[in-house]
Image (tube, helix red, strand yellow):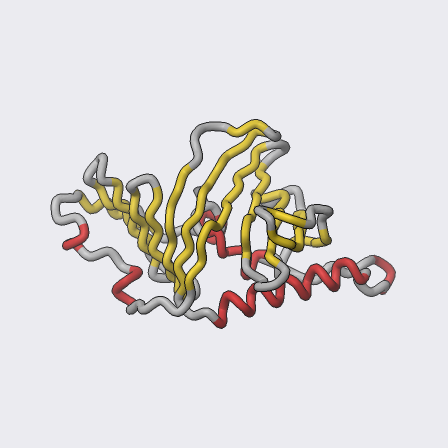
Length: 212
C-alpha cells in the first residue's frame, strides 16, 4: 500500500493551454477544500489491477488525517504516523514496526498525498470520464515528466459540486494499477497529537521492532 507537483508550461515560452490551467484550478480547489476541513476521517476500498483485470481481493480501511499526520486501519493492521515516525502494528505477529517512511512509501498508504502530488514533477490534463457512482465529476490525469519516477500516472475522480476526492488510481510500471475509492468523508474530527502516535497500551504484548 503507499504516497506531489507543478504547472505544465509548453516549450518556446508558450503559456500552458486552457485545459491544463483548468485542471490545475480543479486540483487547487480540491486541495483547499480538504485543508479547510481540519482533521478528517475517510473510509475507502483499495483494489489492485493488472491492466483491466483485478488482482487479488479488495482491501477495506479507514484513515484519520490531520495535515501530514494520520492513523490508518486496514485489514486488521493499524498504522500511526506523526509526520516523521511511523508505527505499524501487525496483530497476527504481535509486532510493532517502527520506521521513518519516505514520501514515496507514504504515497502507497495515504490516498490524500495527492494534495501535494500534483505540484511537482507531473503534467496534467482533463480526462474524458464525466460521471462516477451516479455523480458528475472531473477526471484529472497526471503523467510523470520523468520515467525515473516510481508512479508513472495518476487519475483522480473529483466530484464537481463539492470538490471532494471520490477515487484515485496510480500506475506503476507499464500496467500495474492501484485504485483507492473513497466511500465516506467526514471533516472536523476531534483529535490530539497522541492520536497519531503508538501507545504501548494499544498492544501491550507486542514486540517493538525499531527499523529506523
